[in-house]
Amino acid sequence: MTEPGIFRTVAVPLGIAVLFLVLTPKLCQRAVVQATARRPIVQTSTEPSRAGLVIASSTPAPGRSTDFHFPDGLDAARIEYLVEIDQAFATSSVMPVTEGAPITQELLRRQYVEKHPDGTLVPTREGVMNVKGATDSADGWIV
Image (tube, rainbow, N blue to C red):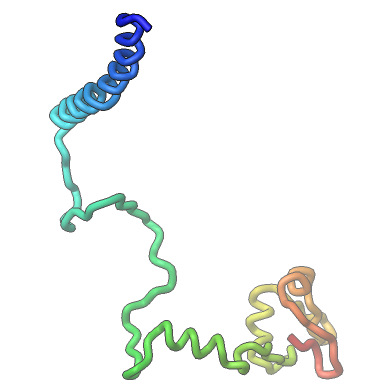
């Protein structure tokens, strides 16, 4: 191989490496400095700035309240575990839907049952779709 051929073989990869490893970061750094010099950073919050991405949302935090006071040795995770392993919470609760039952008012409010003129309670289409395991009995509907 001639000397100009070796020079071209070595010079082209070195030139590309210098371009991407040395010149590009300097150009990017210069562009960032110019961009921040044009636009001052304004903090509108009175909170101290936090590192990383901070997303502000108008949606409240889901169901977490800080006013719970647990007895010694218990916390939210322990109570959740105890509820998960207790078989009493695994079985469904069965209630008759009669005139005086406490669940009847809630089912009427959600329009899952409707009251007929003869006084009987009959599930609506939404009630059949949303209340799982409802059966008819002599006492009324059982959910």
